[in-house]
Length: 99
Image (cartoon, rainbow, N blue to C red):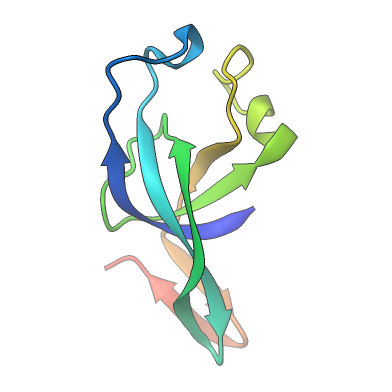
């Protein structure tokens, strides 16, 4: 899993049948460095059935685990938003708290 911030959405009028009812978001992976949450280098597109909005911090699973998420069995996906993050504690302190 990765921690990522939703930075946008993808609009596609033509999709594979398994994607017809799916919302796609663009997420930017983040890392914890020196006790702070900072942007990493990876940007990916993920399926989002949880309703994440731009600016939300999310947990994303990738690869074969993404296909195990509810509603993804018949969807050729590689990344799925599986949680909207409220708080992250690391290195003995709160590094993120949804305000």
